[in-house]
Length: 201
Image (cartoon, rainbow, N blue to C red; front, side):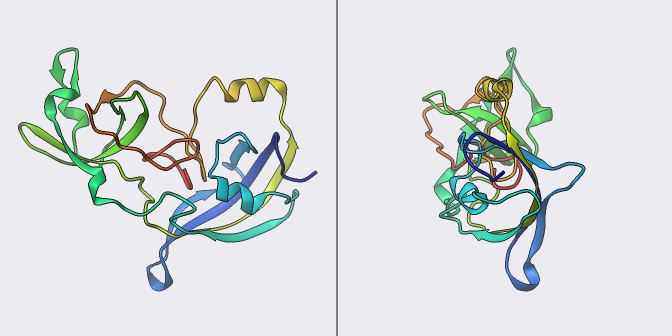
C-alpha cells in the first residue's frame, strides 16, 4: 500500500535546519512517538506531502524543503508592538504568560488564528513576532515510513472537527487567544500553524 489520498500515514524522521557545522537537530519523530497524519487533507505542508507521496511501509526518505516550500522568508514586518491591555484575562493582565519566548495563540482582525512569540514586554506594550519559528530556514528531513493504511471514516470525521499540529503541518493551537487588533498577521502553515507546532508545522 502506498502513501496517497486518505491514507493514514505513520513516519519516523529527524528534522535538521542550517547548513554545514551549524546544522542543528530541530525535531525528531521516533518509532515510539511517530508522526501520524491522513494524507491529502491539508494537514501537512503541500511540499512535504509531495516528497513522501507514493512511498510504502519500510521505505526511507531524505529531502529538503526551501523556505518557499515551507514557511517563507523571515519578515521584519511580522514583528509588531501591541498594547498590553489586549492581553487582559477577566479584566486583568496575565503577566505570567507575558515572558520572552512564550508562544501565545492569538487572532487577527479577521478572526484568523495564529501564534506569536513574545519578544519583549514593557509597562504599556508587548512586542510580538508572528513569523513561523522555522521561517527562513531550509528544512532537512531524513526518515522512514512506519506504516500506511486506509483512514477510517471515524478518523476522517475527527480530522475535520479538531485541529492539531505536527511535523510538516500547519495546524494551529485551537484554544481561545487574544485579539491582536487590526493587524493582519498571515502565516505559513499546514493548513495553518505557527509557533509551538512541530516540524514543518
